[in-house]
Amino acid sequence: MPELPEVEVVRRGLDAHVVGRTVVAVTVHDVRSLKRHLPGAADFVPRLVGRRVDAARRRGKYLWLVLDGHEALLCHLGMSGQMLISDADAPAPRHLRIVLDLDDGRQLRFVDQRIFGGMMLADVDDEQVPVTIGHIARDPLDPAFDRDLFAQRLRRRRTGVKRALLDQTLISGVGNIYADESLWRVPLHYARATENLRAKEVDALLDHVVDVMGEALEQGGTSFDALYVNVNGQSGYFDRSLAAYGQEGEPCPRCGTPIRRDAFMNRSSFTCPRCQPRPRNGRF
DNA sequence: GCTAACACCTGCGTGC
DNA sequence: TGCACGCAGGTGTTAG
Image 1 (cartoon, rainbow, N blue to C red):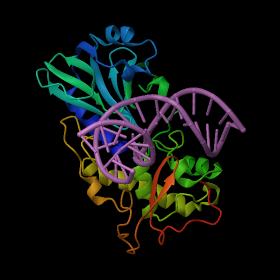
Image 2 (image 1 turned 90 degrees about the horizontal axis):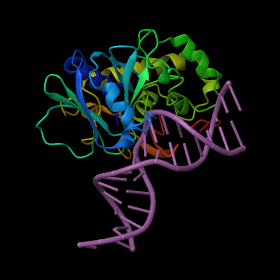
Image 3 (image 1 turned 30 degrees about the vertical axis):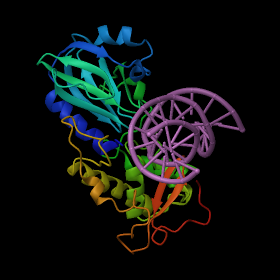
Image 4 (image 1 turned 90 degrees about the vertical axis):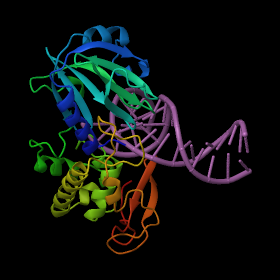
């Protein structure tokens, strides 16, 4: 499931293989991957053909290729999206949705099993950020990320700390995996009320978010199956380092208590019941 | 304005 | 063997 480190691995691959190339043809195999491009494939294809890719950029889990002119090809990988660089004659993978033929004879292929991701063309602002993601907050690996502003906004919220971490308008790039890992490291229970968090706890939480994502990035991201891969189709190794996420019943690496799984926001939360006790007045 | 619930979507694993 | 169902979860929309 691509979160910030996985998306950054893909961005680096695009930076190496796609920047400087020109799109010579576009094939849309499944229009559902263009559901955020409201004018549809009939508009998407001719607008993209002939465009040169000037840069590969990212904010949180959003990824975009800056095109010549004031436009970008914006992409979100959703839960199962992949951006693969392939030779044009390589066999088409299952769930191939969109293909960009490049001027070096290779293809940029968008593969997405569950179709939660997609592509769209968008205008960019003066900082070359697509205007359609103007509401997405900066991510904690962004040099311009403002820690004080984040802490201020977090403590104004009236919700649980994990719910806030997953809110991309407050802080971007954090998904279920890294939220659970960061909270385990502090340690904090996911239901701790944001308004009761102490400044030191917010500070520690941010430090751990940055650390856990940095470590994941060094290991090429997290992979539980073949769904997350870099542009060359290779998986990362960070799943071998997870302390809490997906470890139900396994001993907590800190105290040995079995990790517990709770239903949370139609998904799962993993905590150590001893290190991360449930708060009395928690918010879910 | 803020928060929470829900729909979207497919493949895999499990139980019957 | 085949079917039904639950689960995985990021984002946008809608309701309160």
